[in-house]
Image (cartoon, rainbow, N blue to C red; front, side, top):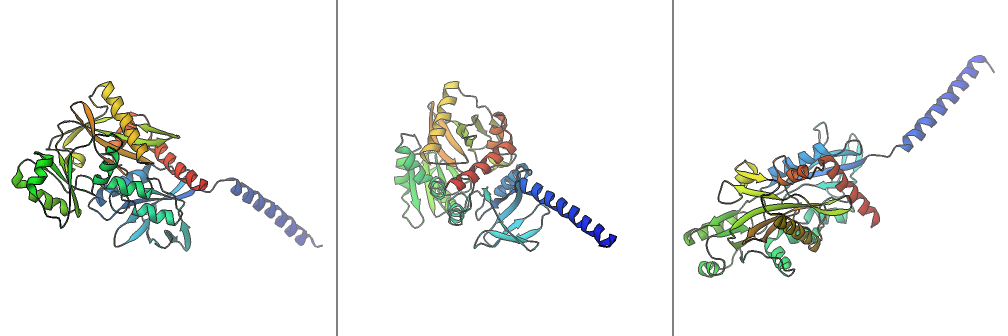
Amino acid sequence: MPQRYKNTCIFVRIQSKLNLKTIKKNKSLPMKKKIAVAMGGYSSEYKISLQSGDFVFQHLNREKFDVYKAHIFKDEWKIIDENNEEYKINKEDFSVVINQEKIQFDCVFNMIHGDPGENGLLQAYLEILNIPQTSSGFYASALTFNKRDCNSVLRDYGIKTAVNYPIQKGDKIDEKAILEKVGLPCFVKANRSGSSFGISKVKKESYLRAAIDHSFTEDDEVLIESFLDGVEVDVGVINYKGDILALPVTEIVSENEFFDYNAKYLGESQEITPARISDEQTKKVQELSVKIFKCLRLKGFARAEFILHQGEPHFIEINTIPGMSPASIVPQQLSAAKISYQEFFTDLVEVALAESQQK
């Protein structure tokens, strides 16, 4: 054999061995899971959801995950990659084609406040597609998003709530009957809404009808509740490292009539963590929050709201996808508990992935 052919054969053998080593090495490296952080939504809360989603997006572990933003709006669903390039989501299987490669997501980190991420619709859609997601299931989400129904369920567990009066759009509104039941002042709320959209504090009977009409701009169901005088506290509850944990309690001191949108997001309140309440009250409200989390079969993380009325915690509502922006309460509580955002978010995704493999 001529020398030049011998040299060529030797080179091919060496190159083949190098390629084989590379293949073996690559096979030993686990593939990164592809995670879509869902944000946006169809409700008035979409701007807050975008902030929450961005916060999660920034803190997810890039050594373990390939992370994409999923903007979910009524008129379009799209993926935004780390270079801010946009790609249309195929709703048939929640996939996307990027650079001629079809990407199927291993998990969705759900950060949509309101419709469709907090009311169970997105959860049901993803369950049909067998795509795991980080928040509570579709039934628990739908139940907790409905303030009236959630209160009814929890009262059966002996949990104290405000007296309430529900109204649906089209019902005859009997203002005297309402006030005979709930009294003044009272709160008028959109039954299925968050971030204090569609809520008013009513001090005079003459203002009641306008407050109801305002709530109907957000939802076709309204809940009117009696006013509870006392200290307002919030408690984050999380699935973390295999346990259900109550985070440090936050005391809410609003500069306004109540903890409204401006107080929540525009700095018109004090959020004091840990709350200035007794150790006994702290323990009681944390234990109650965990009980509610378990009773409603929630998962991931949630934030329960209470009024300490006459020293006893009265349940107001629970948010299954609470705000996760830098100004939000749960991040403040995680910091107080010395739990890093990256570690917590990573744990949520890994638990969701592990649960899907067990089904």
